[in-house]
Figure 1 (tube, helix red, strand yellow):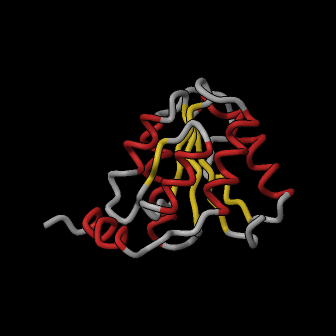
Figure 2: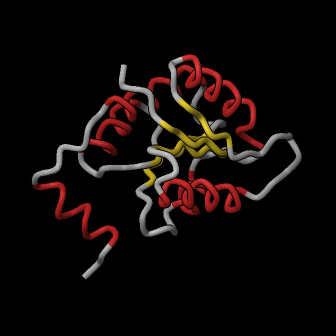
Length: 148
């Protein structure tokens, strides 16, 4: 397993239970986890939490981010509005691995209605344990934040 990291996690109401389980699991692994909400199952808007987690990832307050909503799609779109964020929507470990190794993703998004807790843990483990390969991928990643 990787060295302990500072990780932010956020969700909407649809992923509240998954967020709580993943937060506890990450803490058990020795990571410092910033839970950015929500704290109740009351209906909330996923863009609010996508923007919130993207801001802390972009600022460097945390090293990685895990964003959750019902499908994973909406919160990933919101997070990716921040040019310093590379949030990949994943549903299995291989895409989480490629998100890191090829795209230097600093966030992943998952859908609580799409995958269960064990698959989410496998995705996070792949995401946290994979290094960016750099090399030929670096110029492509650079263009994500600075399009020509």
